[in-house]
Amino acid sequence: MAHVCPWWLGYLLASPLRKLMQDPEAILTPWVTPGMIVLEIGPGMGFFSLPLARRVGSAGRVICLDIQPRMLQRLERRASKASLRERIETRLCPPDSFGLHDRPGSFDFALLFAVLHEMPDQASVWKQIHEALKPGGRVLFAEPRGHVNEKGFAQSLSQAVAQGFGPAKPLPIARSWAAVLQKP
Image (tube, rainbow, N blue to C red; front, side, top):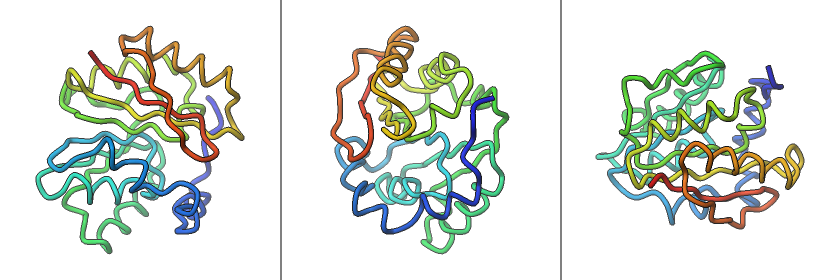
C-alpha cells in the first residue's frame, strides 16, 4: 500500500495558518453551492469539510470517507464544535473501496485534495468517484507539489479521463497541481 499520512499530522493539516496559502472558501466557492451533496475523500480532520458543510447549507450534505478512525473522530468533534455535525456524515472505509454501493450517481461534487498519491489503485479511485457522481457532477482534484511531480499529476488526470471524465481544467492553487474534471 502507498504511504498514508499519519493521523497525528492531521492537526498540522487542519491548522488555521494553512488558510494563508490555501483558503478553503476561495477554493470551494466557485464549485459548491447550497443544497449540494458532496463527497470528500480523505478529509483528515476537516480542513475542507467544515467549509464544505457551511457552503452546502442546511439542505446539503457532506459525506467524508477515510481509512483512519482517529481522523474521522477529530473531524466529528470539530464539526460538533462548529454546529455543523448534522450536515456531515463520516464513513470509515477499507483501503480498497469507498463503500459507496448504496449511493451511485448521487453526488454533485467530489473533493480529492492531497490524497490520491496515498492510494495504491488510482484507476479504481477514479472509477468509484465516476460511479458516485451524478451526470454533470464535478471533482476538484489537487495534489501537493512536494509529493507529486507534474508528470505524475498528468498521469493521474489521464487515468481520470480513461474512467470517463471530460478533459481537466487546470486550477491555480498554491503549492499544488490542481484541476477540475466533470462527468458527462
